Amino acid sequence: MNIVTIPLRNIRRKPSKVILLLLVFSLGIMSIVSLYLVSQVVGHNLEKKLISFGANIVVAPAAETLSVSYGGFHMGDMLYNIQELPEEQTTGAIRSIALQDRISVVAPKLVTMTTIDGKAIALVGVRWEQERGIKSYWATEGRFPVGVDEILIGRQVAEHLALATGSQAQILGHNFTVSGTLHETGGDDDSVVFMDIGLLQELLGRPGATSFIEVSALCAGCPIEDIVAQISTNLPNTSVKALQHVVNQRMASVHYVQKLAFLISMVILVTAAAMVGLSMLSAVNERKKDIGILRSLGYAKSRVFLIFCLEAAMIGALAGAIGYLGGFGLSFKALELLSMAEGARPIFSIGQLALTSLVFAAIAVGAALYPSWKGATVEPSSALVSL
Amino acid sequence: MLSAENISKKYHLDGREISVLKGVSVDIAEGEFLSIMGKSGSGKTTLLNILSTLVRADGGELRYLQNDLRQISEKQLNHIRRADFSVIFQFHYLLPYLTVMENTLLPFMSSLRPVSREIEQRALHCLDRVGLADKHDRLPGNLSGGEQQRVAIARALVKSSRVLFADEPTGSLDKATGEQIMELLGELNGEGLTVVMVTHEPVYAALAERIVHIEDGKVVH
Image 1: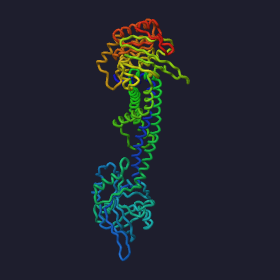
Image 2: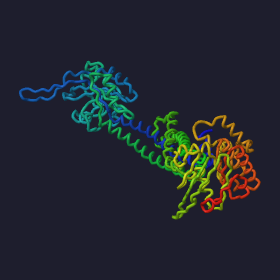
Image 3: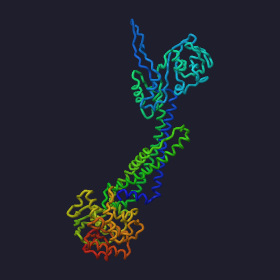
Image 4: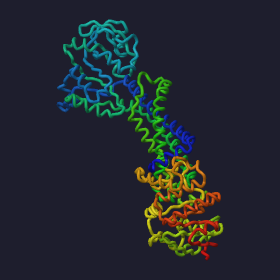
C-alpha cells in the first residue's frame, strides 16, 4: 500500500465512467496509430512507385576540364582524362554501402556516337531490366527489346532515320531489329538509340565499360546526402551527384501524405486530451470531500497533485496500449480498403507499444495538470464545508 | 500545549462580511478533554477548524508546543497534521473506495514507499482496539455509522496522535452508538490523548473535564 493505491482504488469506484473515458481515449489513439502506420506504408510504397519515374543519383567518372583559348578566341571548356567506370565493380560498390537497403535500382549506361546509314546517332547501352525499373513512364509503339539484337529508338531518331517498329538497321557492323519506338518524352531519350549494354561493350571492344550509372535511391527516413557520401567513399575518383529536383519532388509527394496524416492525428489528439482534461476537472469537483480528508490528514498539496496525475497517467497508459493494439489491427483493414498494401505490412513492435503507452500517459498527465493543480490548491476546510 | 489567543475569523457571504469569531482565547493542556459547546452558527466548528489548522484565522495567535502556527511553513503544518493532530467529523471521514484497513493506514500512504509490515500490524491492533479487526477488508459503505466513526478513531490511534479534534462525532449516530463512541473517547483520553470536541449535546459535553461555551463568536463562561 502506498500513494499509488489511492488512484488505483478510485478507478474502481465508478468503473462505467472509467471504461467510457478509456473507450473514447483508446479510439482516438487507435485512429492516430493506424493513421501513422498506414502513412508509413503508403509513403514507402509511394516512394517505390516514384522511383520508376527516374533516377535521383548519377555516378559518373571524374573528369577534368580544360578551358581552351587561342589567338584571342575562347573555344570553351574541354573534358579530358575521362575514365570509364567498370560496370561490375562500380555496381557492386554502390550496392555495398551501409545504406544499401535504400538503393532500389542501379542502371548502368554506356554511351557512344556512331552512324546509321551514314547519319550520326547517339547510342546508349543499357541493362533492360534495370532501365525499365527507372523508366516506367516510357510509352512505346511496339515493345521493349527482348533479345540482344533488338533496339529501342527515340521519337526524333525514328523521324530522322525514317525507322519504325520492325525496321532493320546496321550499327557497328551488326544487324539489329527495331522492337519499338518511344513516344515523345520531351527529353534526351527522344534522340538516342537504346540497345543491350553487353553487346555494345563487345562491339566496341570495351568489356565491362560504362559511361555513367543512374541510381534510384529511397530517400524517406534519411537524407540523400548520406547515400551520396557513402557511394563517394566506396568510389573515390568518381563524381556522385544527387539530382535534387528529383529528390525534392518525390519527397514532397511522400511528405504530403505523411503531413496530412500528422495533421489529422493532431486534431484527434487535442480532442482526446481535452476529454481527459474535462473528465479530470469533473473528478476534482466531485472529490472535494476526498481532498479535504487527505489534506486534514496532513497530505501536502504536492501529494494531492500527484494522486490526480497518477490517475491520469494510469488511464493514459492503459488507453495507449489498447489504442496501439487496436490501431495496429485497424491499419490492415485501412490498407486493404485503400488498395495500398501491395505486400507491404505494418510491423508490430513491443517497443512501439511501450512507447505509445508512455507517450499517452504523458499526454494524459499534461491534460490533467490544470485540474490536478486546482484540486491540490483546495483548502481542506472549504473542501469539507462544500457538502 | 495548544493555545489560541484573541482569534478572529470573518467569512464573506453574498457580498456581506460575517464575523464568526471575535477575539476568542482558549488554552488546552496536554491530556485534557475539552468540550466546545454552542448553538448552531455560534462559531464552535470554526474555532475547532482553526485549532486543528484546517482553517487559517484572520487575526490572533495560535501556538502549539510554543510554536506560532501562523508563522510556520506549509511543510511543517502538514507534518503536524500528519503526526500530531487527528480530526474526526460528523459525516465525512473515510474514503469510500478504500477498505477499512487502507483508510486506517491513509496517513502513511502519502509516498511511493510502501507501508511497512510493522505499521500494518499496528493498524490491525488499533482496529482490534475499536472492535473492527474482523472487518478490516470491508469498504466503508458496508459499515454502520458508528463503525465508520470507530475507523476514524482507529486511524488517530495508529498515527499516535497527540490531539484528537472531534466535530460532532455522535451527530449522525443513534443514542446507543453515540454512547459507545463517547466511551471510547473517554478511554483514549484516560490513556493520555488530548481530546477537543465540539458538541451541542450537554450530556456528552459533561463527560469532558472542561466546557467552553461559544455564543455569537465569543467565549462566554
